[in-house]
Structure formats: C-alpha cells, structure tokens
Length: 420
Image 1 (cartoon, rainbow, N blue to C red):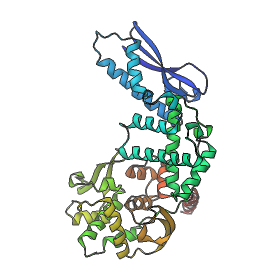
Image 2: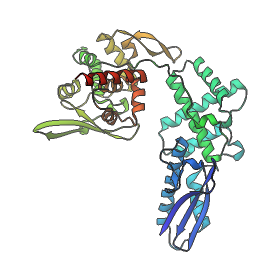
Image 3: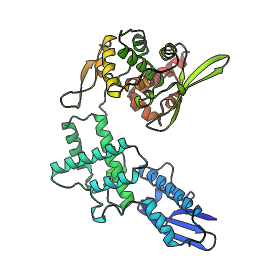
Image 4: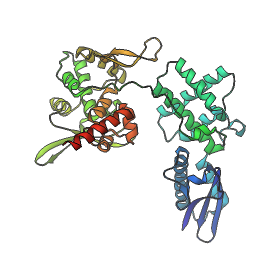
C-alpha cells in the first residue's frame, strides 16, 4: 500500500519540508520540497503544519494537502508496468508544488516577479476579480518604486516602505479599508516568496502589521426606515423594482452578486407545524458557501415576495442599482446628515465628510442593515451562519462595532441580568 508522509529534519525556524513516499517494501523515496517552515509550527504526529499556525503555516498546509492528493491520484491511475522510482515522483512534485520554472531565479527577489508567480500558481483557485486586485497591488508597489527611484524587492517591504506606502495612499485619498486590503495583498505576496523561493523577508511581515482604524460608523437602514421605504409608492416601475430588491437584500443579508441572481426555483416551500413555510436557498458567489435565508411572516421581505407572487423583480445592473438607490432614498426622506465616504465624481476617489444619508446608499446597504439590525438580537454564532462570515471579528469589523461599544453592551447585559 502506498503512503505519503511529510517530515522535517532540522530543528530551526527555517526547516525544510521533505516528502517520503513508500510503496510496500520495494519503494522508499525521500525528496525535498520547496517549502520552509519553523519547527514550532510543525505537528510531528500529523506530518503537517499545526492547525493553529500563522498564515504561512496555513498556506503550506493547503499546498501539502494538494500535493499529497495529487501523488495519490497519479499513483492510482499509473499503469503497473511503469517503474515507481525517484524520477517518477520528482516529475509529480516539480509540477505539483511550484512554479519556479516560470521566473528566472535571479529575478525571484523582485516583488513584481513574485506577483506574476503567485497569480500563475493561484489562477485556478481564485476568481478573476482577485487576480485583478493583486495586479493592481503590484501597480501601486511599482508606482512607489518610481518615486523611490528603485526596483522594489521583496526584502524591501519593511517599516520604511510601509511609511512610504501610507504616504502614497493618503495622497491618493484611498480609504483606510482599501489601504489595509492592499497592504494585506503585499504581505501575502511576500509570504508566498518566502515559502516558494526562500526569498528573504523582513521580520515585520511575520507578525501583525498595524493599520489605521479611523473608520466611519457603518451606514445602515433601521427597521423603521426599511418599512418606510416598503410602504412608499414611487409611482415609477423602475424605482419600485429597486425598492423591492432593497427590501429583499435587507431581509436576506445577501450581496448584490447573490440576490440579483435569485430565482423562484431557489424558494423552498414546506409544511412546519401545520403552516406553510418558505426559505431562500442559494450559494454565495464570493465564498461558494451555501446559505439558507428564512422568509419570515410579518416582515417587509415576506410581504414583498407575497405581493410579487413568490417571484423576484426584474434584474438590473449593479451600477444602475447603486444610482437608483440614491433616488429612492431621497424620495423616501432619508436626509439625515451622517458621516461617511462618498465617491468624488471628478477624482473617482472616496471623500470623507458629512452627507445626507441617501447620498451614501450603495448595494451593500442591505447586507450591512441585516447584520447590524440583528446583531445583539440573535446569538452572534447564528448571525454569522446567516451572513456567511467566518469569524465574529470579521462580522464586527463589517458592521464596525468597536471594542468599546461591545464593552458597554456587556456591562448593560450584566446589569439587566442582576436586576431581573
């Protein structure tokens, strides 16, 4: 019986991962892989990185799992007349674990080269939109390199580079959330270079890099505002359709890439306790996660779908949806002045300021309203299942609930419990 096992032989922070392949008594092959990991991140019993490891350990774990599956798959469909030897295994390992042959070794230290390698390695695992984001990240790094009059290498990503990066992004008027996302991409590429090529990276990238936390309060629609929009007749089919989509998005917490693709076939109907119950079952485009969203009686979404005969409004483009949302918000009287970010039509950049609420409405308003309105009213773990957030931290960051606010809520809950 063939077995695949991964081992490390050194006792250091830069231990090479080796592959051992056995097939009965006649075959026992050991090869080194391209992966390097700290001994503290390695689970000797499992032969894989520890499950609670950092991002690099998680990346290596995923890569080794893929390599292991590839070897077993190739072994199972290899003709028995083929000799299973070192060359056979090398061919699988070299094509399955790395893309070192794509970029010359002398160029591997350049950040741009590592972006190309990363995109090539991940092209089948991530969506085209993610590839575009990494390429845009590379463009930003190269623009900073022009200002510094140098080609940026992976090892140049240090605290001085971070300061230059922050200055550049602030001049470009990028939002704090966008700045965080771009630098996270930079960090991912650097970690990839370390893992794949053993390229030197600065120690700062092995820890948590601090970012600006100066974010606005989340803009959302309250239950009262949602009902006000529901009951408003816009006397225009185009705007009434947008109103219905907004009600549906506020009731499901779905992204526009999901709810704009809802169809009647996704509505599941069954009997529960003698009553007809309906839910919407769909798979998220972004995460491929299956979500079941309840259609609850006496809610705006229930009334809207019932009025539509349990079908959905005509689809519209995301750009038109964003534009029309502002129209219905204005007509419905959402004119409270709030702090937020708005796209400047001239610079196409977000500008922070105080605007009328309807000016800040975008396709995300439904998802954020759902998460914010139900936070604290149902268990957080249940809310995460309904929204598809992987952790409570991600959910709180999405609705922009601060630690101080959570502290106040906890104190009030204890006070209410003690006096109940």
